[in-house]
Image (cartoon, rainbow, N blue to C red; front, top):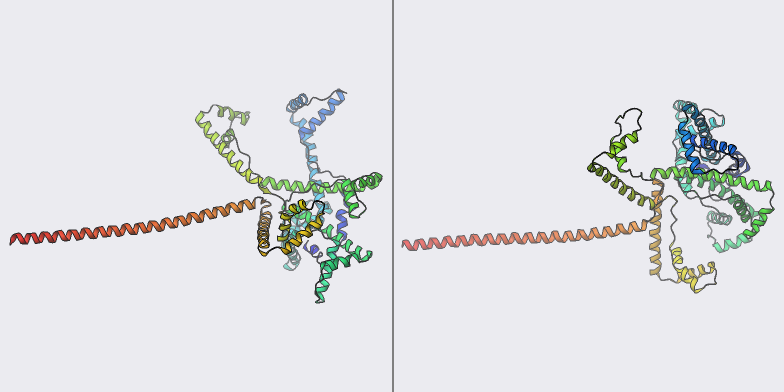
Length: 534
């Protein structure tokens, strides 16, 4: 797993490059030649196919009218007894077994070296069990028996024996992080990497890319071929790792190339092709045996695509929201577990009771169905915004500047090719002010944050939200609104506090004035009383 991925380190030759021949070679094509991942047919479809053959024998030259024929088939199927239906049920079971075996063979042959990693990084015991199951698969042993024997063997094993699998577990945990960085390698990039490594070892100045490009052109054909072979082996291994990574994370697989397209790709890589018309002529000149090799390759690619699509669909079904129930469906949920008379169909029995219900009760179930429909529509809107493919890598500040500038440059220089336009944009970028460059650097930083968030969501959930920018803007607006509300609340609270203080001071002043008035009145009364006595 990760040990093999370590072989991709810079400057070192890849270990065990023969494993790529197992995946892409003739042995694999021959092993998967007779496998078709067609889903098993129902017993009823087998019965219908038999009826079609009977109709063709008895009525030669007549066309089958589907409406009438399908109705007749359905009526005949209902009349059949259990014993007569058994024949078709057995055919269905045989087809089911065939389909399961085909799926297992495709998985085993296409992802032979990475079977341990296909369903997330496994535990040490799972690695040991997978090893035993693989051995049992080759010997045609029953997997259940092998599993029991393996569990007993694992319990009796010492820590020293388990150490090998514990080490493998650590390697597998880091494998996923390495699988993210699997990109196709160019022979020139391999040459540049090696030159930089040599310069670093000798404590020399790092060579410029222009100098390295000239050195690459001046290399001998034999030396160039070494780098080309190394890059080819590395790309084949990385392609396989990428396939497994797609399987694990449930990334939507791309449609495979056909036999003719595989032929064109091969010739284009070998630089033996200049146009599609030339490719068609070369294809027509090929013999049947030569064409068969490309047909086999296309067949294996199709099988891999079908297997990946199957796992992708399973992953999506888990995320899809449940369909809303009807008013009658909500009524049936309440009646679940209640016994009904024997020999009566449950749905028909409950539907008769449902129709006789008063309007008020029916409206209650209709309201429940409407609420359920609203819930479903909201979740479906969210689901439409999910993306099940790897998020796009972040752009640099310069690339964002070029993206904005290119449409205007194309209008100004219509006949100039794209590489020259990019050079013009590069000169403009160098002469740009620091303020405008800072604007694009901020955009690049935001794009990096967007990528990190989407990648984190994708790895944990299996999908990410597409309108991250819109969501972020709405959140920012909401936060601004909240801050405004808080400031308003603070102002209100401060104003209310001031008003309460004022009111308290007023009440105090009023109470003081009242007490003073009372005192004054009592004093005046006392004075008046003393004067009268005198």
